[in-house]
Length: 322
Image (cartoon, rainbow, N blue to C red; front, side, top):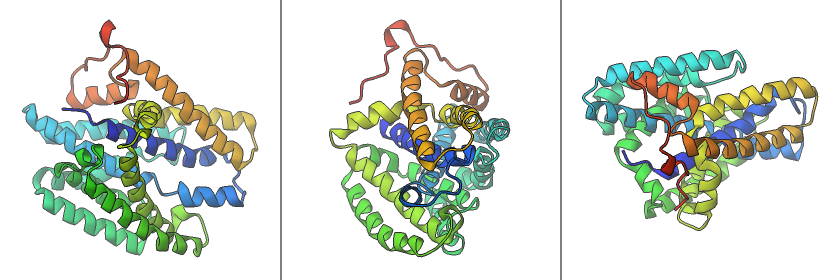
């Protein structure tokens, strides 16, 4: 399978956004804070990146199912092992971060797995859109949003949408303009609704609209010279997304315990610092290894074989961004 660099960048951006959301929860820095920084986070970050990650889980599921069929493996068995491994990693991560979402994603994928394996892609897409629309109308953003987004992601992968995003097709520009147009009234509604946007229907609707705007906007930037910067910073994180998601908690929780009370600005600074450190660390790791440590373990359980991991000496340099 040819790797699409844009998907790695998109996954890396999503992880960076999720880290910014998680740091205040993990440390309680700025827990009672209000003001412009809190408003900026509510408008630009909260509920914006989790939908992207859930869509990408659907994309990843489709690639795994296709890979199993091409190898002559049972996609049911491969997917079952993959979900079991993800649930195990999530259970261990929950010891550090009770609000972690990996187990939720595993359940979401389990619920829609029969549809992905047995239904045609048009039905997958229709069911996913119907489920997501229902959630957006009734609840906005919640755990029940994941199954619909996983279905949409799997169907989108079947229709070749990841390749369209990777080459910034003209249709992406149209989708970006539509998403931006939807964002305007959605943000107005969110601003008029009090409370944490993660727990309001208005915040969830605005988050979904902005998630689509972020995905399509990044795709358009991917066709510009900014591509090199995006690849340099976020591609390594995206290739080791599971490792980065878990390791961020392992770093942030001890820092929060040592520091005690701090402002929301400190929380944002810590999140940015963690992302920067992970970008450098992942690039160095990937010079020698094909997979991140958790990605290697997840792949080993998924395919029930030992993946080739160490790079030959003449291939230890992470490919330069195109």
